[in-house]
Length: 223
Length: 417
Image (cartoon, rainbow over the protein chains, first blue to last red):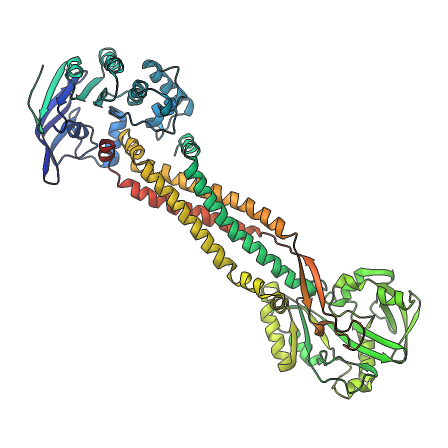
């Protein structure tokens, strides 16, 4: 398998607090990986660094062999749009938009016709089992449904990598299992690489590769 | 910019959208309504003279007659000499002049107010030519003929073909006119050719006893001026006629309308712009609160691949839409207000000097006024400018908010919330 994402000696500090301390690791195309760690271990910050939402204090990140640290903010936004799908614990759907519009949201600045945008969003919602909830606003969806909308949104641009931050953290056990099943299916059937950040060992068990973060450093390697 | 997202944001945050819209609506409506009110009074102030096709009436105060016998000039209509009229004609902005000779005639048989006019002139009482009720109006080349005011004719049993006497000289009445059609300025009982009036006045001992009236002079001059220069012309006419000048114009009428109008006229732009400023502050508050509410949404935009330009365009378009929508609603509201204001009737007092009647005669001391509907209209240019200014303010607010939004760090808002 090809190397998809690699980071070398990654550091991140907020003021005098070192949150990520010299992390080096790599992820391969089509892999399903997890980064486990307790609250405050620095795993979410590491995910933000990997998705370029946060700039590292030092160290390098390579995506498909190209260093992304040198890109400016708008270039990084474009990079995320083309290659990365992000899923958050709190879903972060736009409250004023319907499920369909939320899924199409990353396409709004892209030159595609409204019909094509709608069709692509509808297909993604059907893929996550929400074909019957197209026009519902987030406030009228359950937590599990909202997370499925967020996953559909992450998939709208056919990403090569999905980065998920505690995707089951706000869900009941059954909904959580459904979400993990969706990730597994995407990984298995579409070859989308998935990196899940979690504190839950049951979630981490679904991944084929697992890393553990303790106090800002990567402690463990492969499962 | 995405229109459907824009629509959703405006529609699904009704309190914020309404606050911004209403703020802009009332600001724009206040500005335009004040302008309409001010315009209405400005037009009303022009009405007394506009009814006779003039912008300025020039007179000069002179001596009081020694005796009230025969023909005499009221003290407000002393002679204006022909060389002075020529000087006035040459003032920049003067477009036309109507010369008149106004006098009273005290006879044993009764009292007459007579106005001599040039029927070929388009400025001044010659406009009565369009108010003939019977017979015909005066024409070029006429001599010793008169046109009678219909009310005067009725009370004196006159009709076309009757004869009247002015200072003992016979005149044939060739027509009757409705004097009310030219308002309350320079009203008379009989209208005659200006040359006949000059000859009569020059021969009148009670005129010549106190005035140096020459056969080419006039004592009321009506002036049509370039609309942009009316007040400067009025000022120049005053300088020509000297310290005894009595110059009436829209400005002088507006001064007698009332202090309230004066304040509105002077400060309408200022108050209106202050209102618009308050409206823009309302818009800023509404959009700022949006920014606070939507920090997380902006973080999501950046996280899913929107550039800063895309975010800026979206936020700016929201502010511009609210400003544009509010200003158009404000324009509609101002149109409604102006319709209501147009129901008002205003009374414009006409100074005694402009249509003098001896005080000792019945009705002579009764104040006169022209009463008209307030034509409170909204001019298209200020309306377009106001809407454009509002949209510009919306654009400025949108850009300002976008600058603030550019400082939002997605990792921060997507972590903490």
